[in-house]
Image 1 (cartoon, rainbow, N blue to C red):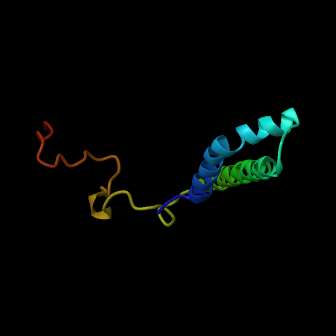
Image 2 (cartoon, rainbow, N blue to C red):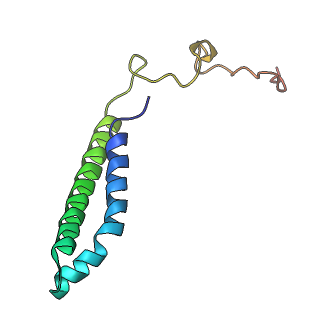
Amino acid sequence: MMSKGTWQIAAGGVALAATIFVLPTPLFHVASGNADAGAVGLFVLGLALLAAGLGSLGFGLYRRSRDLKTARSYATREPSSLDEDRPVNPYGIPRSYGAVPPLT
């Protein structure tokens, strides 16, 4: 199961990467004062991508941090190994699984 906020972080990263390609040239034309309608349109698109990317990335990081702060228990944990491999006595010597047996 993927953690919460992964899709928002990925979408925010893609939007910010697209901003790098869309925004610089129209920003130069708008800042220098010789922008035509196409440059202004790309400038607005770049600003929208920047705002959407930052917002989505921030929201995804917020959701992930909220998910990481929740307390875990055996009822809410994600299974990482088979439960029959878990020892009944957590302080006992683990099984060797074919390795050298412990000295007794």
